[in-house]
Amino acid sequence: MARDADSNEPTRELTGHPTGDAITARSDIPPEPTPAPAARPTRGLLWVLGAAALAVVVLLGVQTSGLWPSFRNPFAEERTDRSQPTLLKSIQDLSRYVAAEGNYQVVVDLQKDRQYVPEFLLNERTLFVGAGSVEAYVDFARISDGAVVESADGKSVEIKLPAPQLGETNLDLEKSYVFAERRGLLNRLCEVFGGDPNRQQEVYRLAEERITAAARDSGLGARAEENTRKMLEGLLGSLGYERVTVTYVTP
Image (cartoon, rainbow, N blue to C red):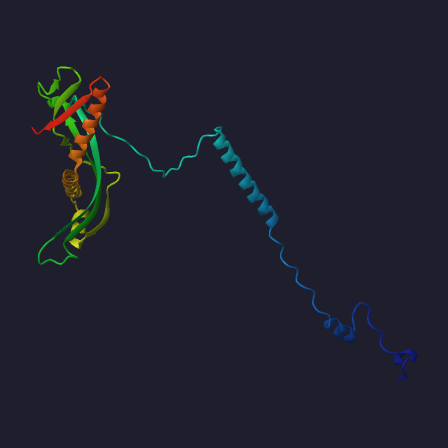
């Protein structure tokens, strides 16, 4: 069978369908990048933080100016004073002339332990620094009759006074403190389950005793005698006495 004249012509490509070469050429083209996810709204977050900071500054400024009530910490420490009113026990008139005062400091090293018991079990040692003062005074209320003798010409006077005395030791608790303390295991257990609330009283008492003894040996009484003599000489000298003699009598 004879073909038509046009049968020897190549088959035409269908419109819209790529040929093999076209497909190969397209496969060499790199794929388009996948679009990145949308960026987070950092700018909006910065605006929110800035507005919050501005609000805090405004509130603090209003609170400082007194236009807004102060913020209260719900966990703040509260102090409640339930002390009873002070009771007046007595009033005593004093006629003492304090002529000298000594200030002292002592270190008390007190240790308590038990024989044949290890120190780590039962032992108590306290180093206490005690500071206190002692006054030396002359009690004018104890001046007897005839203790003041004036000369016939009125230019001299003789006074007999009781010897100076030492007052009670005043332990200054603000300047006194426990320097070091060591306690055994059983001592600590006893403290947990009760303890001794007056445990420090003994070191206080020892400190007062040491300070009192030091005041007796430091010549505080002699200093009080000299100061009292100078005071009376100046006082009576301003009254016209040319000579003032002061003697001390031990009661």
